[in-house]
Length: 312
Ligand code: GUN
Image (cartoon, rainbow, N blue to C red; front, side, top):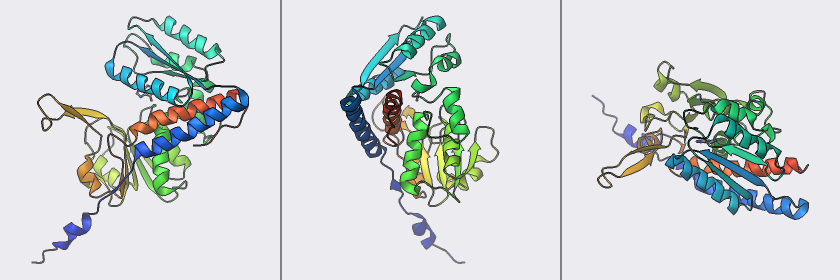
């Protein structure tokens, strides 16, 4: 009987680790420069208003880092922290005031909202020109129709796409891309951005039959399901680029009793043995989201000033 002992070592290549922190830092540097130039030339400081309702600690942590980064970029950074019992009318009234405020170029309402509030009409009440989250139907519709230059693109897919392009360049012709997850916030716009870059795109989700086999066909595999370490080694095509959008907090008894750690939707260590390139969690897609929010805000400020916005 033949024993192919060498096949194991051949498969044990180590993937390139895609550094989202570094990519985000270079976006933030370009944003800061563009903001400084806009202020010097047109006297306009980009203004970002972040609205948060309720007391969810994780959401407050996200929002605080968004506000802090906006300041670092030289923006006028405004945070509205509204109490849990805020009504739909009060929230929409605040959005209307921010829409009418010429010093504000970007409005972000942090999701999820408390259960008694309906996010949909709130998002639709944001002026599309100030919708730096890219969630308004006008902006979602522009991506869907292939217009990537006049609207605002949802931050996490825009950031994930920058990382994909670092590896594969701007033209993904001939490559199979699989996106797991079909949310409006990520999965749908990500699929559309990959399609716009000429990839052949499959949008997979919880009802997909034999998800592992579908994923194994992917040259670019993007996981955004919110289930810790679901994507296993044998779901990954050898040499594939793996983009992990999941952020899941799991118990870490190896650290100490009661401690936790963050993991993605991909079983990182085993997937990295097969993949060609892979994003870590944390330090992959996560830092890109905030960077692209800053990029969208500086783009919106340029358009409001009648200036050509920078490209990212
Ligand atoms: N909650 C988690 N991610 C996001 C995001 O990108 N935008 C908003 N508005 N809320 C979020």
